Amino acid sequence: MRDAEHRPLSYFVAHEATHVMQARAFGRFAAPLYPVWLNEGYADYVGKTGDFDLTKNIALLKAHDPALDYRRSRLYRGYHLDVAWLMDRCGMSIRSIYANPPSEQTLLQTLMADEPACAPKRL
Ligand SMILES: [Zn+2]
Image (cartoon, rainbow, N blue to C red; front, side, top):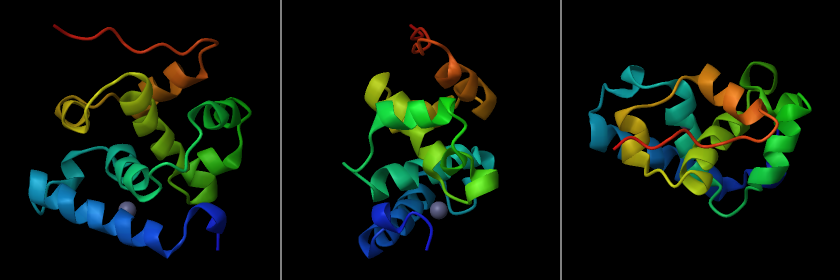
């Protein structure tokens, strides 16, 4: 199993339970209205709570590690990085991210910068 070290059974239960909560918060059929990186990244953020090194994963992204690329790894780790960046480093709530999610490309460009910076907060 891919990334088994970071994905015990409790991870899968919490990940899927998060999708149930997303459906209750936004509607059963709302998932396609939001970016995949956000739906899956937040489910991974919850599923792996406390088991994610933001700085290390940014370094792996910059090194083009396949684990951070869903298309190559089939892991949500890169999406998790996007959500962890916005919530843990930029201080955004999950509701504020869902209200105005940045594009995956914008997040990638931000995280690949020499010194990634949070976008200015809207007033
Ligand atoms: Zn999922």
